[in-house]
Length: 569
Ligand code: PLP
Image (cartoon, rainbow, N blue to C red; front, side, top):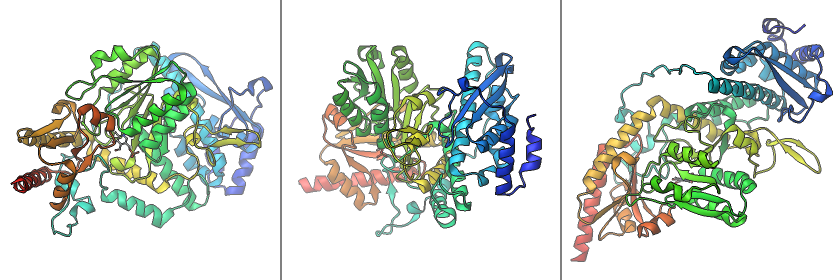
C-alpha cells in the first residue's frame, strides 16, 4: 500500500541523513515496477543520475480530471523519492499540480539537505516532467472550454517618488571632483545599482558563498536556494510559466549567439530566410548575418518608416513562407522606438517562423509577458536593469529549449558522459555549462524585485514625462535633429545631432559639466548608415533621473553651443 504524505511527514522529517536514506530505500521497495515496454526513451526523465521513467495516468475529463504519477527507476533511493512525489501529487487536478508548493513539501521533509546535488537535479527533472504534463493538459482543457479569466488582485503601490528612488543609489549621491553630483544619462549602456543590489552581492560573498548545484553543506544549500529563487522571480517578472524556461547567460550578446548557433544553425538551410531590422544593436544583427553566411539562408530587413518605426504595412513583402527566424528588438537602443512585438509574433505565426526578441532595452522600462505575447526566445542583460554585469537571461519556450542544441559543453549541463558520446540535462541546466555567475544571478533577482516593487508602469510613466520634457526643449533648438519617432512610440532614449558640434566634442564638454551621455554609433552601424550619420549623441533615462538632470544636461548643451560659436569667431 502506498504511504500517504501525512504518514511520510510523520516518519521522515525528523530522521537524520542515514535514516532518511534507509527510509527512502524502504519506500522504494514498495513501489510497483514498470514492465520493460514502459521503459522507453520517450518516458525517460533526463537530468537524473540514475535511469527514471515517468508517465501520468489521467482519470476523468476536462479541468476536473485527476492525475496519477507512475514512475520507476533503476535506483531504489530514487524509487523512494518517486513514492514521495506520488503521495504529494496523486489525485490532484492539473491546476492543483501547477499551484502546488512541492518545494515546501521538500523543505518540510528536510529532503534537500539530505540528498546529493545530482539527486536533487533528478528530483527537479521529475517535478518538471510532472508539471509539464499537467500544463499540457491544462492548456488542452482551456483550448476546449471557455474559461472565466482569472483577474489578478490589483497591487497597491506607493506613488512614484523620484527623490526616494534616487536616494537609494550611492553613486548618484557621491560628489565628483568638481563638487557637483553626477548627472548620469547613459543608463541605456548600463544602469546604476541601488543599494539593495550592492548589498545583496556583499551578503552572498560575506555570508554564504559557495558554488551552485555542487555542495550539500550549509553554504551550498543556501546558495542553491538563492540562485533558484532568483530564477523563479525572474520567470514571474517576464510572465514565463515555467522556471526552467529561464536560462542564466552572461548577457544579451551571448544569449543571442546561443540562439543563433544552437537553434538557428540546427534548423536553417540554404534558401531559408532570416528576417531582422536595420535598427538592431550589433548583438542582434551580426550573429544572424554570420549565421546566414554559414547556412546559405538569406538575411532580409523589415522596412523602416522615415520617423524610425518598423513599417508593418510592408511586412508582407519580406515575411514569407521561407522565413524561419524573425529577430527583432523590442526597443531600439538608438532611436528609442518601441516595436509592436505582439503584432510581429502574430504575423510570424502565420508563416511558422520562430521569433527572437532582443529585450535588452525594453525589459528595464516596459512590462514584459513572454506567454501573452507568445514569444519563442527573449534575451536581456542584468546590467541594464539595475543589476550586475556578467549575467543576463535567455528565455525560451519549453519546446524551443528542448529542440535547441547547447553550444557550450562541460560540467553541469550533461546527463551522462561516456567515452564515445554524451547526453544533456534538461533545460535550463543544458545551457548552463560550467560555473555560473552565481553572485550576479542572485543580485539580479534583488534588482528585479526592486523594480517590481516600484512597478514598471510607474517607472515608464516617469521616464515618459522626462522624455517629453527633453524632446520639447531640444526640438526648437536651431540646427537640432532628433532621430526616432514621436513620444508615443518611444521609450526614454533620445539620440540627436546638433549643427556645429561633433558628438565626440559635445560628449567631452558635457563631461566637463558632470553630465554623462553616450556618443558614437551605439553599436548600430547599419542604422547610422541608413540615417546618413556616422555618430550621434544619446541621452538615455532611468527611474532615478529627475527634471534637474534634464535641466543640467540642457544647460551644459547650451554652454557647449556658446563655446563652439565663440571658437568660430
Ligand atoms: N541589444 C541591445 C538593444 C542593447 O542595447 C545592447 C547593449 O547596449 C545589447 C543588445 C548588448 O547587451 P550586452 O552588451 O549586455 O550583451
